[in-house]
Length: 400
Image 1 (cartoon, rainbow, N blue to C red):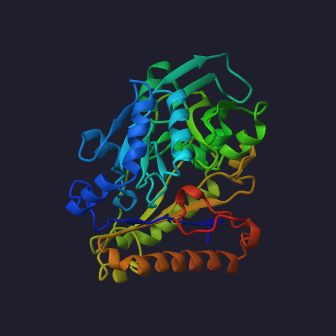
Image 2 (image 1 turned 135 degrees about the vertical axis):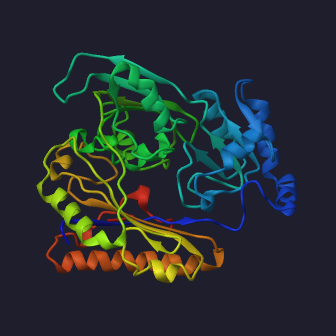
């Protein structure tokens, strides 16, 4: 193995229930649910700017649908709060009624329950501000800060900042939400230069579980500030992130696809890049895919088996970063002071009956890769085997 590999798992299940094709019995179940009473209480208590939407309303569908159908659940209602005060009101009501709730930013999760619920789905779409505060060039390369609403996807953030000639350390794939990505850590095309996204956060505006609206920075609520940097939504609902802004010029990039006959050359090119490229502005993701039975640039070890079990997409994403990236670490709940390269295992399949096989296969495949790396002398065993929460499966133990 040519570089350290961090064992991290992810999976995508295309489940039995399609978002727009919900069985009638689910509609009846929702209508009879005690959670509807909670929804009505919220509707009575919040401001007129906050919306509450029920089954089959277009904004109900928008709030529940996810990029991966494995994350979809049909909530009793979708609530779109307009400001932190209404978020506070909502949290107090769901707490007092013991109603389960979900928090939805971009909805790019693959795990059920991570941003979905059968109770009250809190969709943060109305938190959509992007405000740039320019400042002189600082020693860390920043040129001010940007206030970013937690309901945005990175595509919208980049588009808003482009006229200013600045950017932030954000997501690399279209459709990824600001909220979960940032609270999980945030590996970016700019991480070689500036660290993870959590290393560039200067403030969180957050509504605590008891309804208190507060701000967490390095000097104010510092423990909360530490916990939010990798602690996901376990400490409250973040409504605004303040990130460092950095100068952004033109970018050259693209996608190249190779067939399986070039596999050895792709491996060597990836290894050469990781070993020899020191330009912090250079970045790649090498993806080994098995798609619909045709090998694009990956061995058929698991793809061949998966094609017999309703699998149609198998992907291994190798993401080389410079070891110097970790010098930018400013700490946080996601430990990233030691250098590890993310590895994203991504499986897609159709039949829910095959879930157990795929989950087991993902774990086995990650274990084989990890053990091979250790056998070749990589010092990544034990406590050093940090797992990246944004790539982890729902059952993965993230403790280290």
